[in-house]
Length: 303
Ligand code: PSU
Ligand code: MN
Image: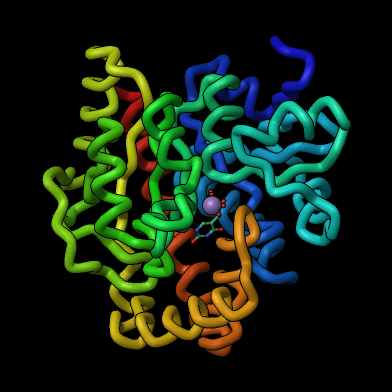
């Protein structure tokens, strides 16, 4: 085991026993949601995964140690940290070597969870190709990670702050399976449908697990994205979200926000503009994703 990796006793014994484990990211805690909802949801997600019969493993970096299975105290600390680095693939070595605190993006969580031997990961929304990427080249490192690291990410699609058609094209180019969970329409995070169709879907956790087993067997490398729409009761109409997003994008342009600050800035603007509605939807969909990921993890272990 490498000197920077620390797996909690609970997660380690679950993995050793071949039990279902679901990884969770921490950038959503530090840069995606405000205090105190960030802490509450982080702990609620873990509880939901346990309730389904799987073991949660929240991933984060504390003083240079990549931890798989943060404790409640560590999650609580992280939720209030001010100086924490938003760490993606390129940041891992500096954060570890300099003994910094880092929250892990989807890409970094995949890397660390895969080191531990975890196959399933639940999040809210994935990073993607940003609008205007044809001039500023802003494409999330999440997208290239899906092609490299063997983890299945259950998400509610991607936020429409992104360029969704380009995001789907990019995933196709990278050979990443993008599979709808009981849908053939790519979900747009707050809304159940983006209007973009998917070529593949699975009907339930068993079919999803069979797809993962086939992927293992074929040894194609890389991971998979399962797109699970927000529950109907929590969904927000697409035209309402579109209005929020236009305002948020205009603010980002006005303030000249660039680089890794773009996604957190847009998320905070959305929360503000929607008067917390975007956060409510966010909490509902991520909980739903955690439950689905747990069911898939269990079906995968049983298959
Ligand atoms: N999208 C969301 N909520 C989030 C993120 C994305 O709807 O919290 C976070 C995830 O951690 C994701 C990261 O991996 O932002 C992507 O950042 P970037 O666009 O800088 O790659
Ligand atoms: Mn970016």
